Amino acid sequence: MGFKLTASALAVTTLLSACGDGLTSKATPERLDGLLSGGIDADAQASISERFENAIANNEVASALQAEFDGDATANTPTVALTDTLQAALQRNPEIGRAAQRINRADAQRLNAIFGYLPQITLSGNYAINEQNVLATDNAVFQLGKATYPSIDAQVELRQPIFDLGRIYGIKLASTARSAAEVEYIATVQKVMYETFDTYLRAAQSRNRISALERRRNLINRQLNAEITRSDAGIAEDSAKNSLRVEVANIGVDLSQEKLRYNTALSDLAFLSGARIDNVAQLSPPAGVFGTERRVSPEQAIETALQNNPEILGAIIAVAEQDIRKRQAISADFAPVLEGFARLQYEDREASRFGGGSTTMDTIYGVRLVVPLFNADGQGYANLIARVDFRDALLQYFSQKRQVSSDIRSTLSRLSEITRSISESRRALGAARALVNSERALVEAGRSEEFLVAALEARMVQAQERVRYYELEYLRAWGRLEYLSGMNLAEKL
Image (tube, rainbow, N blue to C red; front, side, top):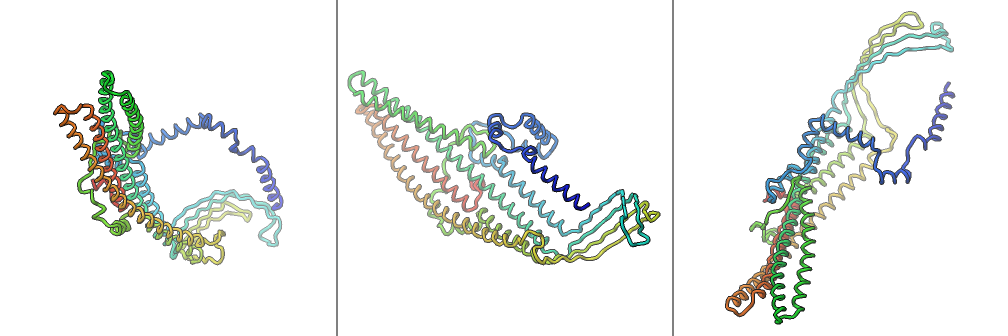
């Protein structure tokens, strides 16, 4: 009989191997081309969509999440302030929502780890038809012949871990993972706040430049009209007129590109905040922000970051987590496991070949000791891999620490450079404003023309835009320093 079963199994295996091409669907070039051109099967897509809609409609949690995170909120006004945008991102950004759900998952995993050390109770039952055929025996009672009879059996079993290092480390690991999820939530919030803050400032820079380009174009058009009038009167050369036309055309190109950048920034803001944003407000850096690089040394900033930066805290927790995993793996490979057990067994045999049935109730209890000796689970030793993972986590921490330290030094240096740029651009603006005022005084005295004032005003507008650009660029660098230091920008503004 054993030989026949083995031969049958081999025959079935050979048949399945021979028919493999027919039983499976491979990613052939034709199939892949069909997916690219026509997508997945229409009926399958309709079924999946219907299942998705039913899952949302029939689940209160899914419906609540859809109401909170799906779609765009309607802005009360076309222009949204920075603080309002940050608050919208805090409430509606899906990455923050997912980070919160990971905390819930870590809590559930910790609860399950605790359950691993609580009593385990199981109930099982069977109803079976027994067919026996005694082919050979030397027992006078156990005679040759056949018998068919039903039986019912049930079993209640209780197991209680007494000493199991793997489960103990599992509880510690789950608690550490919960702390990691909490730090990850903080890191996600701070990252989203920084990205929203930085994107808003980029949009504000684009808006300022668009406004400056439009003003410059209007002023140069005034010059161009004056040059056309003077050319018609024969007191100006065509080269000046053509030069102004080229400048107007160049400004038009710059304006088109800047509007594209502005719309891209608004689109990014809408994605980050979940709110419809048609425009950003005029923004000026708070007075207390300037001079940060003089008040904070690189060493102070790095020390603050090492204490508060959630990315570094996460790397520290990852090292602790891998250390626990290593200990858990060592215990699984070598530590004995002791558990208590109790079993209640009930069996009702309706009849048997020996004439008459039986009903029994057995109670079995005791302790079980399992000692791993060699390759206990048939997969080698897990601690070999766990040791490598622990060293990898350490290297990740050192790498994160070095990156943050380097980034802080670079950002502080950038703040110093931007401060010098602000000073130079403000001096240039002051000189340009003085030239405009001087030329306007000459016009009022009848010694100059208005179109010359327009030319100087165009240069002044460009200088004004440059000052605003560097002021917002300083604020962007300050925001990055705060983010690297582990600060929530939504609480700093």
